[in-house]
Length: 87
Image (cartoon, rainbow, N blue to C red; front, side):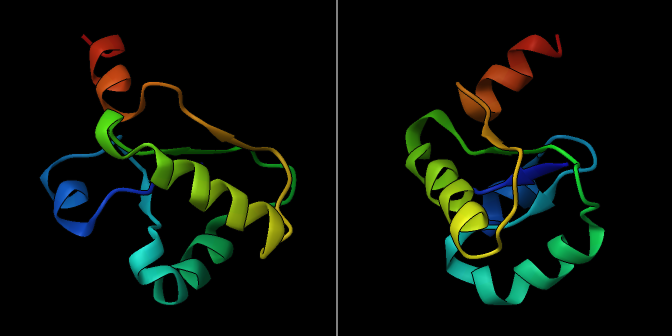
């Protein structure tokens, strides 16, 4: 499962296909949908942009600590790295 930790506008402008939005600004509103889509044992990869990659680390930490999810990872290099690899 891909989770985009960037602000809403950046997500709307483009994101990894199939990614769900989960950012700190709207955590309480977005988390239920994410948890409903998640299946036990599924890997979760959180990303943001190079400029705001602290956001992905924060969302990943909260998923581990508050939602008790395992297999939560952060995509190094974020959205820009994914775009580069998709070329």
